[in-house]
Image 1: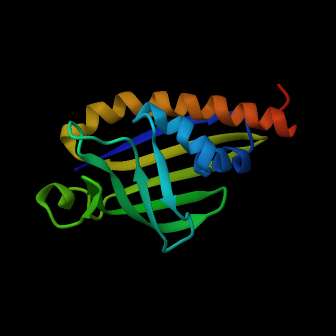
Image 2 (image 1 turned 180 degrees about the vertical axis):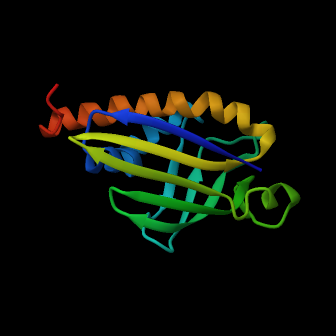
Length: 161
């Protein structure tokens, strides 16, 4: 297991960044970098089960991940602990492959200074998949930045430059 770290500065308040990142519409857009058709089911409330889903078919049977929101401080921090995955539409927590995900975390930290948010993402990944995530996460964060900055302008909350 390997922990990856990503960081980006977004010209928008933490509230706008976190709401864009975790809201249904924004989530579907920025996560499309990982998998077209990505979405989540569940709640971001602490202790809630949440499922991260996407398009799956016979050639790609893994349809997503299942986790529990371990901690959520709105606009500051979110921690997801993965409990398994979804294979062929069914929750799998017991297979050898699912065991690789159990107990891993994905954390989002939002820190705002003068209307600019630093977003830090820390996630545990299987070493065999690290290169894929190192390629995809920066692109997904670029997409999230575009979305959040646009939303900040719409709300009249874009920091003056």
